[in-house]
Amino acid sequence: MERSVITLNRFILEEERRYPEATGAFSNVLQDLTLAAKLINRAVNQAGLVDILGETDRENVHGEQVQKLDEYAHEVIVAAMDHGGHLCVMGSEEAEEIVPIPDRFPVGEYVLLFDPLDGSSNIEANISIGTIFSVYRRVTDPAVTRNGTLEDCLQPGTDLVASGYFLYGSSTILVYTTGRGVHGFTLDPSIGEFLLSHPNITFPDPGQKVYAINEGYFGRWSEAQRNLVRRLRGDAGGDDGDGFKLRYVGSLVADFHRTLLYGGLFMYPSDNRHPSGKLRLLYEAGPLAFVCEQAGGKATNGEKRILEIRPEELHQRTPLFIGTAEWVEMAGEHLAREAAAGA
Ligand code: AHG
Ligand code: MN
Ligand code: MN
Image (cartoon, rainbow, N blue to C red; front, side, top):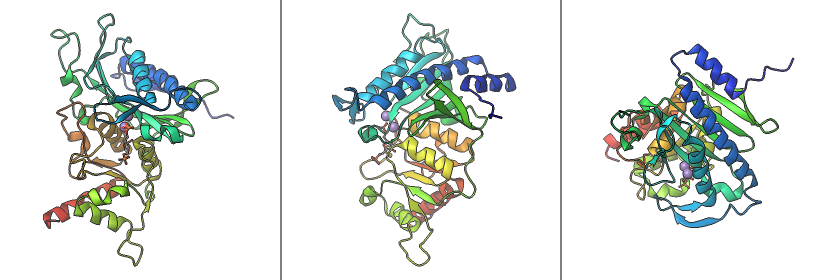
C-alpha cells in the first residue's frame, strides 16, 4: 500500500482546519513563494547551461559581488509575491531599501523578508544553495499608510508568523514552521509538487558531534572563541577532547539543514573584520532560529536568544550560534566563563 501522498497544499489545508485561527492568507503566501522557488530551482538546475552564471558588474548593499542568479532569484520572488494581495511590504538581501507593493496591486496584512539565494559563492561549484524567508504580520495601520513601512520589517523573531527555507540540493526541499512544529517537503519534479517527506522534524537526541565554522578565520577570532574551537576539536589531545568532527559547506541553509537533521553546532561568530558577525538577522539568522527552536534546538548570538534581538536596521548583522540545544548552551557558557575571566 503506497504511503498516502500529502502535497503541500493538502498539508496546509489540514493545518488550517486544525488551527481555525490560521487565516488562509498565510497559506496563499506560502503557495506563491513555492511557485517562485520552483522557478529558482529550475534556473539553479540549468545554471551551467545558460548564461546565468558568472558575476554581474554589480555589488549588493554588503559590497558582495552579486551573482546573476542572486538577482534572478530576487526578481522572481518579487514578481511572484507582489500581486497576491497578502503582503504590505517586502525586504530582500538584494535590495538596499524595502520593496513596496506597486500601487496597481492590493496590499495585505503580511510582511515578507527573504534571502533570495543563500550560498551564492557555491553556485558555480554545484554545491547546495537555498532561499530563506521570514513572514511577519503588519504592525502599522493600513488606514494611515497604505504601504507597509520599514517599521513593519524591523520586528523581533518572537513575532514571526512563519519562517523557513528552500534548499536546492541533491533534491529540492522546503522546510518551514508556523510555530506548530517543523515540517519538510520534497519536490517531486515529475509532478511539480512538494510532498510531505519530513513531518514534525526535531533535533536528534543524541545528535552527532559535529561543529561547523569557517576555521580559516581562526586568526580573526577572540581568544575565547579560539579556545572554544580548540576544545571542540580536541587540541588538548588525550581522549580526543570533546570528540567533535568538522563539517562546513559555506551555504548557511545547507549547513543548518545538516545540523537540524543530524545534530551539531553551527557557529558564525563575530571577528575582527565582522564585529557584528556576517550573517543577517532578518533573513538569515532569525528565520532559521525560529525553525531551530521549533525543532527543540537553540539559537543565540553567543549570549542572547536570536529571536529576542530587536532589529534596528534592515540588513543588520549578528553573530550566530545555532543547533543542538546542549551545544549551543555549552558554547554560550564557555564564552561567558572566558569573558568573566577576562579572555
Ligand atoms: P549569501 O550567499 O546569501 O551572501 O550568504 C552567504 C553566507 C552564508 O550562506 C554562509 O554561511 C556564509 O556566507 C559563508 O561565509 P564565509 O564564506 O565567510 O564562511
Ligand atoms: Mn545568505
Ligand atoms: Mn543571498
